[in-house]
Image 1 (cartoon, rainbow, N blue to C red):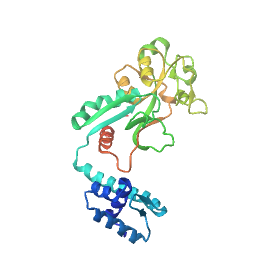
Image 2: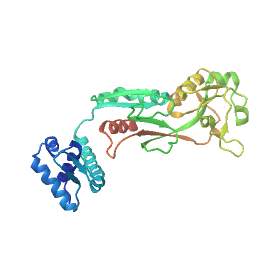
Image 3: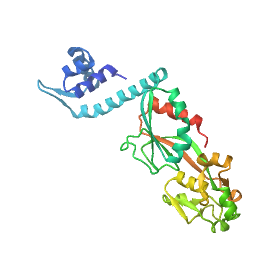
Length: 295
């Protein structure tokens, strides 16, 4: 490559600063040094990038085209440098993490104290939304999403998947009886989601199908609300193991219809806006969480 980093930086700085003199101040170089770097660049490219007058600078058509590529090259170099710097510097700053309340309560909150101890320079800000949030609008750095991701310009990192189970409390089953078939399930009080409707398609083999669409007697927007209703004896629910595993182990909930349950799993992903080099605090949080998750 003919062009040097010094020449690219001189060219971009001159355009950003508005003059060679201002660029020299920004780069802490001499005016003549910046001017020579710009001249060398134009000579190597055999093209005039900037028209210079005593009053102002004006980009040529060639300069417009080259400016965009020059910025991209310098940004890529900064990203590469950040990768190295991250290895020797502890991540710091504010990190905003959003997740639906069940995942936040069962998979994030239990590990926050340990994370804060390991990374005291990172200031965590946690929020819970049951619906998909706009990361830029809500100023969120990382959003944890359950289910298949829609096509997006966001970067994503898989955190695993969690199996769905059909459950009820022992008290409900003692009172209403335990359904042994999908047909018997229709005679029970079922707890479902208000939205999206696909969450009310339970992974049960029903005749020739591997899904059973329920008609909820009780609906809620949050999986945590549905969990609490099921524990309280409100009816039968279909929820992920990441939020009900402890309930089953400790006897608050009981799995049912396991013999006709399809092995359906909800993907768990972290999505974020970043350049090629992920920020140190984002990487630190995701690496930490991935080693603690029990899905």
